[in-house]
Length: 392
Ligand code: RFL
Ligand code: PHB
Figure 1 (cartoon, protein in one colour):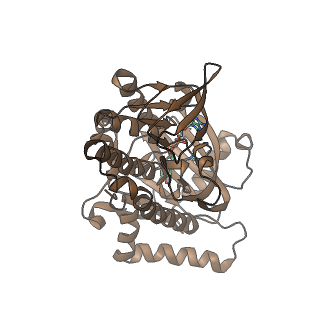
Figure 2 (cartoon, protein in one colour):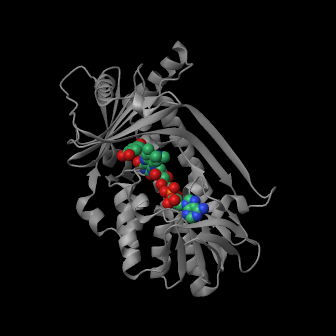
Figure 3 (cartoon, rainbow, N blue to C red):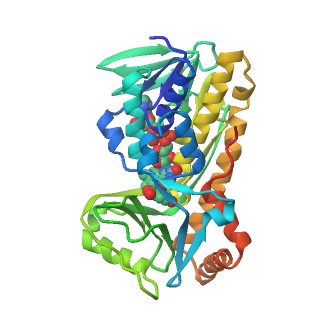
């Protein structure tokens, strides 16, 4: 097989890139290791920055998102049994965020791709990227029991954190930075109306809790749990009781309980791979960087990488100018490091430190108090949460 851009991975990054390239008249092929059903059901992100919504609109993939997405004007912070609203439009000059599940973005992009898009092969597992320094890099992959090759002008590694693209950087050409956090999240999807209009980030001595949502009838909730937690140790009643205790405030508020449809535990990690390009291989999204979910940045970063990559390839295709592609890694990494910093700050401010002492605890409270007392500090949080400007 031969194509202009070989895309490894049919998650949000790979699918959006395929869509943007297709609209620019550039041919590509997407190889996805898993089945369509698996990719469409994988529970992950929910919070979209305005820039992400704009990018999906630009790709012609925002029709249902515009109808069903829930526009949020801010978030709520809870600590010491108090609630504090952070008003995004007031603090950021009018910006908002949108709740729309990653599963739905993937479904929308897959439907478009299968209707009129370039080939999207499921159960096509990339094994290796070869000759990334040459003018015709090759992706070796397994499909329908056979080993095959895809010869490309460019390869986009959109294969997530556990993918193979990163391995094609020869020793000495890249460096990675990683940090593991001493806690995980137990995430549940519940068939019950959200208990409020906004996301709630709660910090307490029992640990962090997050109340998010997927629709007016489905809630998404998370609890900080120790690393190594088995979800089976958390029967539904225990989950609801713990959530109720962590969200408790002085004043009127009730947590709505309902049937839990799924449960899973996620570890928390920061990771950045530099640079994001080697020869004609370019990494995008989780393949190049991951952040702890507390800042809700992972999917948004994947989309902003893809936007730069699609613009770079489009400019090259139209004018032969490689300037944007040459600056790909540098442009993306500026935003990646800022999102990593923000996610790390949010994570450390809101989670109970397993080995933390009374001083650490006071520092967390002082940080939270500063945000609720100072418009300047609140604006700093709101600006980062709602999304820093896109690089292009
Ligand atoms: P993905 O989604 O992991 O997709 C990669 C795809 O590549 C495929 N693949 C391969 N295909 C072919 N050959 C191979 N060798 C392959 N190896 C892998 C995989 O099957 C997969 O389909 O990466 P992508 O596209 O970069 O997208 C990134 C996002 O998925 C991720 O950053 C977010 O989900 C992170 N995240 C959040 N991000 C946000 O912006 N806002 C949020 O509110 C938010 N909440 C979250 C999150 C992630 C979470 N978890 C589970 C880690 C909440 C959670 C709990
Ligand atoms: C989600 O809705 O899954 C979600 C929202 C905000 C976060 C993390 C996850 O910070």
